[in-house]
Image (cartoon, rainbow, N blue to C red; front, side, top):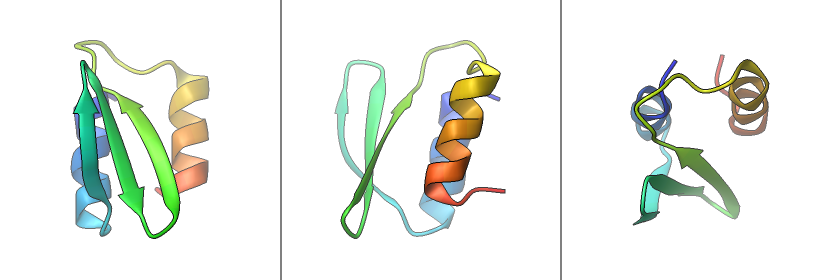
Length: 58
């Protein structure tokens, strides 16, 4: 799964894009902040699982 796919799912869940620095999207929801790398490759499985766990994605 690519980073941009994660960003799209998070936007549907109410997260907002705070800023974009290079190829990293910084997302915010309430007082939570998450950095999503949006390179043109799939995210490594460990990083993908960590982002899902911290943001509540299924």
